[in-house]
Length: 292
Image 1: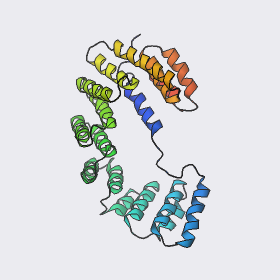
Image 2 (image 1 turned 90 degrees about the vertical axis):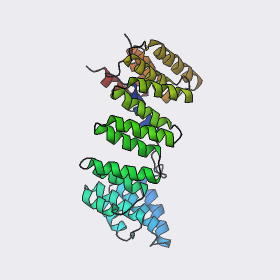
Image 3 (image 1 turned 60 degrees about the vertical axis):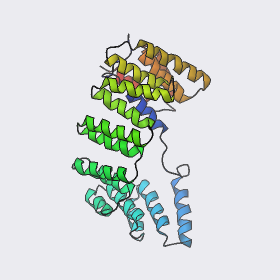
Image 4 (image 1 turned 180 degrees about the vertical axis):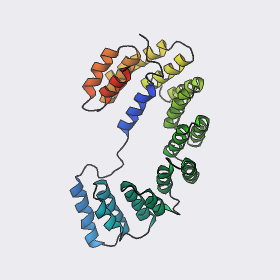
């Protein structure tokens, strides 16, 4: 049994799963219970009852906890600073009021406003959503904006445009790894296997022997009609060495991927099952990819 072909089991699906697991929550006080966080903000509001930043923070806490009416009441006295308007837009989105969210964002030119606007417009007015992301990129480019812009173009069937956006981001941001990964993924889906191979090769210059990038390179080689086995064997060897050097669930996850790609599906499944508590969904992902 050879490793999985791109169409049946893309290595990038595993990689996307790992990226999600590694992503930070983005909420600085996530380690404290909601009641404690709210009590801290309320205590500060006793001293500064009209502080817009504290009111916005309180509204965000309430929104995240699902207490939307209280959040709305808090925002009613938070003023019209950009931060308050952005939080009103987020609250409107939570309430399913797209028009209200767009109204709250009207005229705002911050990065967050552009991103929220693009999310609101993506389904029904994708061209306006693309324009919002272009505006955000022009103001202050970062990898996330280029990813959003490229993925939306790709969903619209404009793969060449998506690849160009990512190339521009790579050039502007000094070869951001996440953009190369996305460019390789889209290139594979668009039938541009040589481009995917080149991107995988460029990634390996950053970290020679990284298993997931070797597997990506192997998939591209197979799609081009070349023998992928050496690259898959190299990925398996590297995954074992990295796990021996640094035992961790993420390195076990990488080994499970490499085992599966090498045709050792039973061993991959056994290893994935041991990870299911710390990395929920790994075993389910493996089972899904083996379904006919």
